[in-house]
Image 1 (cartoon, rainbow, N blue to C red):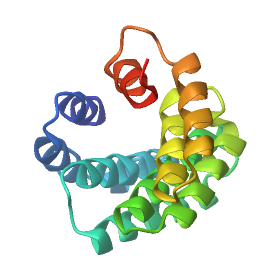
Image 2 (cartoon, rainbow, N blue to C red):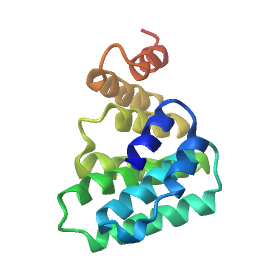
Image 3 (cartoon, rainbow, N blue to C red):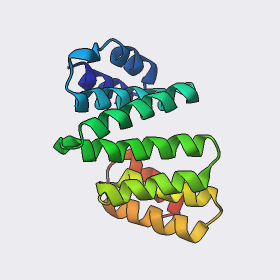
Image 4 (cartoon, rainbow, N blue to C red):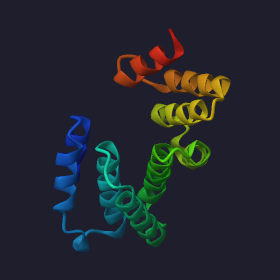
Length: 162
């Protein structure tokens, strides 16, 4: 599974290798929802390694189009949450904290309310908007949802000073 290999390389911190693996996929034979997954994996890899914003945006647009086409697929909702998170990450990178917050809140509303990383993203956007109380509340929610022995939990504890 090339997509699993790409996820592995993202987890190892080698986004360039992940992007290389994802680009090698011939998506024409894939079901539409898997095409969206491929676009999202590549966008995530490019976001991780500081890739071209226009290219990332094009991948997210392609993912959304594929998800619109595959709306009845049960995975489409989960992948749409990923699109919102990726769009929020891209907005933060561009300095648009308010736009990022809208995307992260849409991800939470779309089913990511359990996701510690999405709550962390909300906190990051609020912090960028100088809403320290809101950021602290979001990071506290993220820490409550995070497994205690993960790098994310350690990062959150450091942000919260605990």
